[in-house]
Length: 345
Image 1 (tube, rainbow, N blue to C red):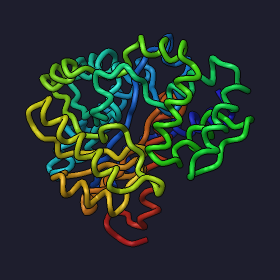
Image 2 (image 1 turned 120 degrees about the vertical axis):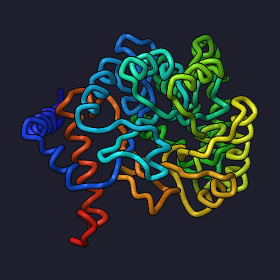
Image 3 (image 1 turned 180 degrees about the vertical axis):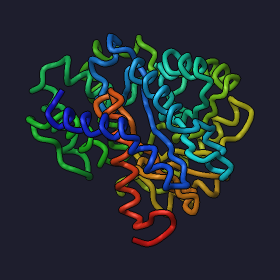
């Protein structure tokens, strides 16, 4: 554990011991929403290339649920959106629709009788193709680094948006550089790298990354609800035309309705990117609420940009770290809005 993590852990444990989180929550009347992605055991093959910001271990998730039940009323997300949730309400959400949401998170949710919402990228469901960030990370960790960057630079040279990351760039820096490309360019780059590493691509292709529609049907019978997260996990940025994003969102809505038999009215922005055009699109699709990855309490005066607190293993793997994560995120949001108990400060 790093010195920074050790300090945060100590602060968190002290705050937990002296009930600082409870005292802070008692002064607030707003709920919170947590955002998870993946829940996997520490010996899972996927962790060989999964970003630290994308998962919690199954042991960590169990500890989270126990902790949250001590301090919050864990409620369905819809009750928070409708303003009918109990005091100290907390909702649990997952983004993307990973296979482990069913295999590892779902059994824990059932054991503790806890509701949750999964935001689906509908094109990901029952698809053997892994999301491009995972494929790129897998190639980078299992192939010659020099050749990887050579391929990357050649591809970027033909694009209009963004500069190729340097050969000493971190994995995270590479992913962030790609995210600045248009959706079309990202797809083209993925095709290029997949063609460069056919054996590695096939190894991943043999391992199903996503939920099936059968998984979704079973989860819906046991208190798990589903929202939308686009169709192709399209990242809305300045390089991608709004019309392309709109088409993708519409397709997600239609696919979900056709497979499940009912429309979804909740949406989570891929990569947390949102803006006026996206809000307009979602309202036209009949969305009741949409969710960002900006931390803080829920503010129902802005139902199309509802806050969520990201939670992953490297910042929440202990009770102390989770306490610190929640308190720091919520305190910053209160300071940002300049409002405690409805009064300006």
